[in-house]
Length: 80
Image 1 (spheres, rainbow, N blue to C red):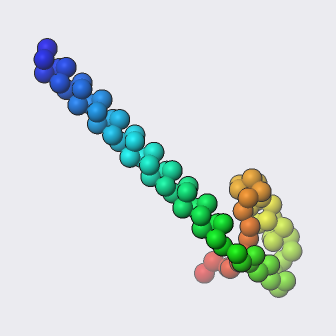
Image 2: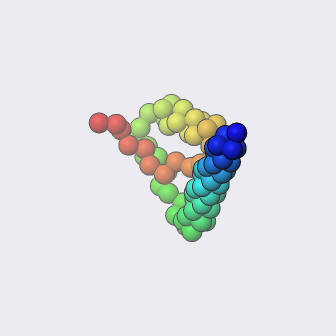
């Protein structure tokens, strides 16, 4: 019975440790993203006019929906 208690204690400590480390990774990543976005002063270049306006409108609408209005398009390049 003593071994089971030790095993469950180690299991709990391990799970809590993993949770804390993953929480720190997520919080640090979000903080880094916010800092970089605040320091970024470029407004980006608007999409070039040579592309199909319908495609540009679809891409813009998709970015607005996915990022909930927080994203912006800086460059559109064709996939090779």
